[in-house]
Image (cartoon, rainbow, N blue to C red; front, side, top):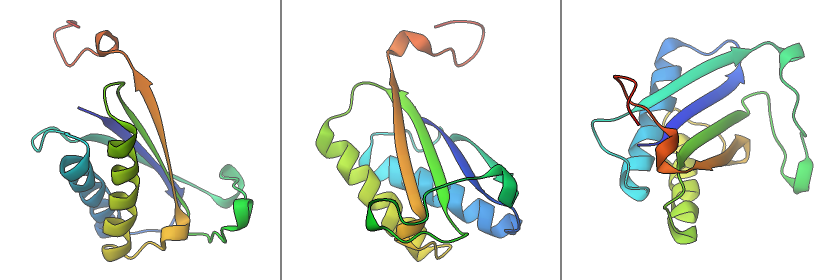
Length: 123
């Protein structure tokens, strides 16, 4: 069960936020063995002075619609699963709500299974 956090610039609608979260979750279900009934994620918005990113880092041109997607998950997935996840997230967010694939920055934080507690204070 991955946990995701999305950061973006302020100014998007609740419908846009929901589409980003829904598409991200569906991509994780399709490619990353995430449970369909277990979306856990947060989204935060940042003003222009609170979000700094390389607008042309590695030759990729980024706009003000830039998204940062952090996914924390068990360290059990293969490199191929990770690559499939990145690709599917970009495809789904491009389709709905229309995020340019150049504006999607994804990074994984992998942790051992014992680093989670889903409730009752139990690992």
